[in-house]
Amino acid sequence: QFNSILFKLDPDAVAHLPRKKDGGISAFALGIAACEVHRFTLAELRSGLEACLKANLEIVTTQLDSRLILEKLIIKLTAPAID
Figure 1 (tube, rainbow, N blue to C red):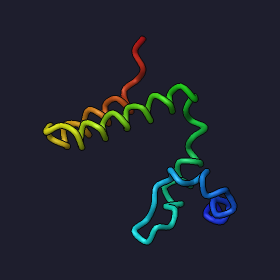
Figure 2 (figure 1 turned 120 degrees about the horizontal axis):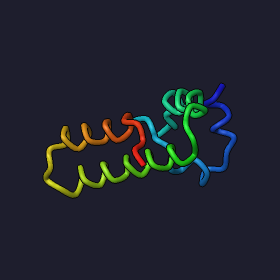
Figure 3 (figure 1 turned 60 degrees about the vertical axis):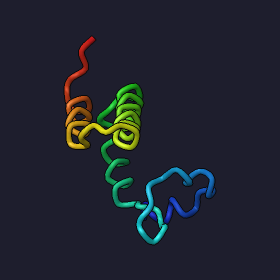
């Protein structure tokens, strides 16, 4: 059901979404995320997305160990916010 809704959207609106090997939208992970999004504030979601982007850039642009980068990402995403 979630997948059929995605296919009704404008192609530009879904261009950034994750894809499967065959080029179709990976709706399974998006569906799970959509069901859990209510647990977070918009600020937390933005912060998490920025942390994922930073980790991705570190993986592709540095020679740091990918496991270390991903471990730091998990800590950032799961640790309680400290003001």
